[in-house]
Structures are given as structure tokens and as C-alpha cells.
Length: 88
Image (cartoon, rainbow, N blue to C red; front, side, top):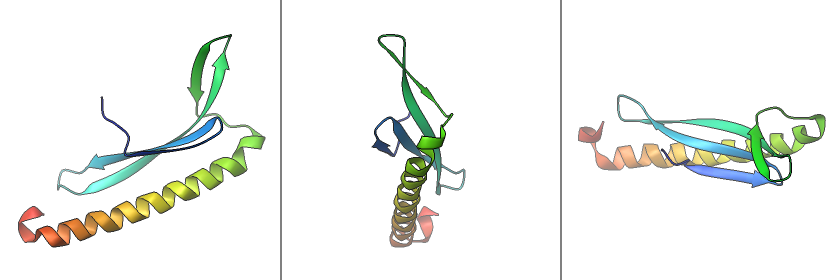
């Protein structure tokens, strides 16, 4: 199974960032926000459903994810430029 590129967590909220490869060799990124909760006494589950009290915190996590991805895209572009025309 593929590993996430990065995960940002605060309390029971998290944002998982995935790096994907395009057919032309470039990278693109996707994001999965989630909230963890306990099912019964011991089983932890995740859901994409958020409550009112989760919204501002998730917005801040998504802002951090945006910054991470922007920096990664900049690094990806630099790596492509440094590799020269044969890498594209």
C-alpha cells in the first residue's frame, strides 16, 4: 500500500496528503481530511464527517496542507529544471 507524503494532525482531526505521479512524470497532490472517533470501547474509526466545532480547526489544518503542497510543488519544479530536458 502506498504511503502518504505527509500527515498533519491536531487532536482527533487530521489531513493526509498524497503525492501522485502523472503519466508525463510530474507530481500532483491530493488531500483527505478526516476525524477520528472511538467505536465502542476500543475500536477507532475515521470519518470525513465534521461537526461545527471541527470546522475552524480543520480549516487551519487545510491551510497548513496548502502550504506544504505549495512548497513541494516548488521543489518538484526545481528538481525537474535541475534534471534537464531528458527528465521531462
